[in-house]
Length: 535
Image (cartoon, rainbow, N blue to C red; front, side):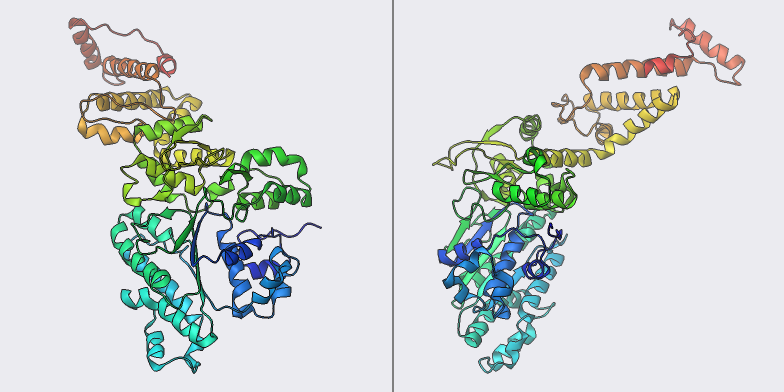
């Protein structure tokens, strides 16, 4: 009988106790521990099992789970190693996650960070009664609250490690999940510099100037440059998509996906599953699947969808691409057509350069999993251009939905036009065409007051400075011939409206036509169906 799939469950203990669907990734615990690296940063795309792997480390090492090794890890990869079995439940662990720190302002972000730090410290409230703790330590613990000052918040984990080391007789492990979420939100909302100052203090106090730290493990999507928040962490080992470490410890491998499809009687859909959810490459190792999407697909009974697009976390990528220049948009058109582009990738994301350096954008897209680099990693990564393409069909659908959201307001007027055509309302349809043609003409001539209004109708045009012609059109804007037809239809519509006698005008309407004839204007012949013909 197939196991129950618990979507969104990120707690290792719950998955094991309930017997839910779980793909064994406990080998990561052994690999990381035996590496003996003081502080490790692992960068993987969102929804790729980072949180679950970190919680697995916590459940294995933490003294909170002492004596439960067989219950939680029996039959799994890590439990087959006698040395690792002896380690289980013997290390104090401090666990934090910045995944929910998404304040729109600096004050909201700092408040969220203080709350996370307070929760991590309060998880060890038993220290207050420990004989190894001094009165100064107890006074410090009392100051750790939601309204503590920045200096207290930045040094709180450092002080907690000292207390845990004295109480347990062994130095603790600090786990930090989704460390880069506050930084991405800060860049999107424009308070990057102020947020990075606090994050730099926190990272330095927790992972660098902390003599009581046993080991540190950090996860995130992007590798934020050392110059930003890791300037003082020369002991940091960074694992990215190009690194040989932990290649198959995040995401599902082909063997794991085949086993899951067989368990849920969906083996016949293997080819389509590859097309939708395969394509991630870590250090040249292909066929790594998005675990979130595969689990959703299995739970749905074999329904294909862009499940990745329906989750949070697209904000930064959406904003970066939307702000991009014409070259970036042209590259995306090529990718959306199934092609490839060649770019030099520096995997250190410098947020301050995202708006000015095109290569920084591609580094972000590669780290986030939206594009992949097939083939082996070049020896000279810094200077050798790498082939990039969209990762899979799911990513293609994701970007298609992002583009539709960006240009959603532009469809309102065209929707009205379509409804008018279906209803046979020539007057409304012609008015829609006239509005679009008039605004496009004003924009082409550089008439500034109407420029913004024109963008509401044609937001997909790259508009130049006033007086300059519009730039290249992207994403399927109406071609030039169609716009000319729209303008011709609009002019004909205006002539007909001006010279047509109105009901009740009587003699005044006839005089108006005669005056037009005297000026030499051609009076249009009556055509009841002219409105439909224009549409």
